[in-house]
Every structure is written in C-alpha cells, then in structure tokens.
Image 1 (cartoon, one colour):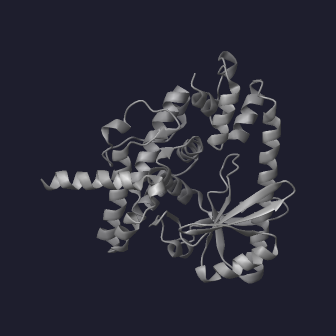
Image 2: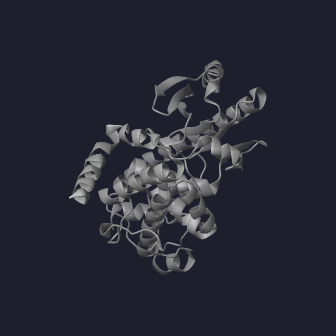
Image 3: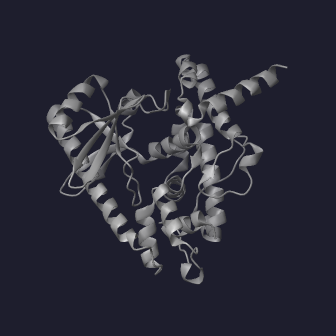
Length: 345
C-alpha cells in the first residue's frame, strides 16, 4: 500500500477502515512525514492509536507541537475577536477552521476595510506580534512565545496571487459568513461552510494545482453533509463552476476508489455533463492528486472569460498575467497561448 493511501485511510474522519486486517507500510516514519506534509498529522496520529499502529517515538513530541500551535492559534483568534469588538475592525476567518480536526500553518483572516490594516498591525505589535512577510494580497505577522509561535495572514482580498476569487465586499453584503464556537464563550466569524467548499476548489485548481488529503476530506464532508445545489449556485455566481466541478469530480472518484461501497452509498454526488472534463482527469486517481495542466488552464480560462463576459471585468486579464511565476503560472500561460494559436489556425 502506498504511504499516501495508508495516510488517507487511517486519518480519514468519515469512513470505517478495517486496518486491523491490513499491514501498515514497512516504514511508518515515511507515512508520518507524508501526514505532516499533507497537514493531517493530528488525524493520522489519532487513527494510528485507534488501530494500534506503533508510531515512531518522535510522533508524541510532534503531536505536542501541533497541540501547542493550535492553542496559540485559538488564543490569537480570541484576541482578534476582542479587537474587532473593541475597535470595530471587521474581519472574518477562512481556511482556519474545518469540520474535522485540522491545524493549519497559519491563521487566515480577511479584513473588510483595508484602510484598517495599518491600525490593526499596530495593535497587534502592541500584543507581541511583528511583521513576518509581505505577500501580494496579504500581510504576514508572527508571535513567538514559550518555544512555539503563531502566524497570522491578514488578507485585503480573497485571491490566489493576483487573481481575485471572490469579490470581498460582496461576501460581507451577502452575509457569507457564520459563527464558529470556541471555548470560554468565544465565537468567531468565519467564511460560511458552503463558501469554504468553493474556496477550496478554487485554491486546488488555481493555486495549489492539486487535490490534497485535507482537500479530499473537505469535499467528502460537503458531499455527505451539505446541500450541493447551494454550493454549486455560489460557484456559478462567482464564476467558479468549472473549478468546483473538477474538484468534486476528482474527490468523488478518489473516495470511491479508496473506500469503495461505503463512499458510493453515502456521498451525495451525481456525475453529469455540465463541465466537459479533460480526458486525463477521468483515469485512476490517487491522493494527493496533481491536476493535469489542461484542467488547470480550463479553470483559469473559464474564470477569466466569465468575469469579462458577465461582469465586464477586464481587470481579470491583468490579474491572470500578473500571477507569480513561482506557482508555475508561466507554464500554464504558455499552454493557453498555444491553445489559442491552434484554435486560430
């Protein structure tokens, strides 16, 4: 069994896995490294304990590291909620709280009014944070404490690189957020679960170019517990129908291959012909799954074309062109240019 397949099965929070009848990989250390890389180590750790797999000694220390990190992230979320209430700085969290145990690398928050950015930075500096990095749409801050740290990514726009995924102000106007309960009576404002599914689909196709293990679990949760008609409506309104369909299509096939009849029985997903999938998206799927270049280009072109056609948003063309080369966008643009040249012949 592939290390990744073993991690997906043992860590999964949604399907029964009869691991006692299966042999773990020869090198559990490599499987552990895979779980860390895919950001599902806490789930993997609990799954291994449940099925009595003996993890490497350092796993206990690693789990403690994750516990401390999550503790610091929750403290930061509470602090930001206090700042919001005291100073009227409107913000919402996204990509930080999932419907399963998840410890991200950092806390992501969207600021409604970017004019409040400098003020928020100064307030956070007074609380021990410092500017860690400056990205395209976000400002990164860090706080070191007690041998651990917490990172905040303060976003002015919800985008991948230069390409805006959602119109941020529309998220606030349409109340595309919900309340996530923390301990001690704290409740934070987060991007709604339906929007989170669309965001994950967009990130998977337009930013990360892959379906991650955590991304698979989020898709499975959506197909088990959410009204997909609502999710698809949001995607269509945001001109992200193609990324969503590709994301769900791959996640569904992967889940069925890994978990068999239980997945087919419990996942509410119907494959249809709304989106013409590139042929090489329909073969054998393993997770993490790298989307083929045609699928990624198809997603970019559909988003850009619909923004221009429906919203008269010519700025999206410049946003696509300005995408950072570090994410491989130059390869995709070369492919798109070749595609247009062939169509013109």
